[in-house]
Image (cartoon, rainbow over the protein chains, first blue to last red):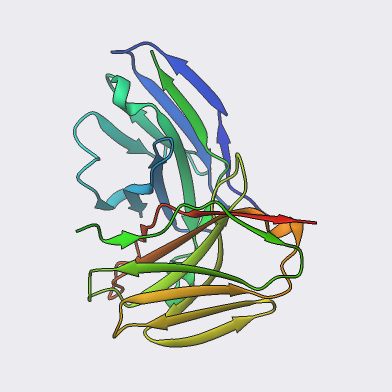
Length: 117
Length: 112
């Protein structure tokens, strides 16, 4: 069964450093998403991406964040200058995006745990 | 007032029990109601979603939505140890945006 994959599974970085989190969405999916989950808190939407541009973003997704689809398979989240409060689990998701069910059925990856020290 | 409220639990039940998981919400614009299951160290997995009020059944799982009370439920019949996970409710307004707003999740433990 196709699945969303994410690398690395755990990333440790120092405050102020740039990190890139990588995701490979399901191959025939058209919409891609990033979410984050701070330990013990809710899953929060960051950004959605369609047709090589951002379609929606939350207030969390400020200028320090960016997303890119550098090739036909990868989808990346870059955090330019990490802060302690960026420590969280980051989930990538993808959906077909066709019709209501296609938009609703988002498939999540296993996540990347980001630890900022 | 928080948009989506969900008791974090944990909820511990014996195998075979009927489990009831619930969420309340404040935003009357929500039209789509979802339940996700999240195993430890995994991403959320969509179990089912419903549109507006009513019931939906899928195997041992039944989702109920009462929009007048802003209250949704997930029932699990004949619960199994493999159902032990965190269950997240989520909601979206639809109309072109299906981005879910999640609850905190309820940790469910089904013991043999």
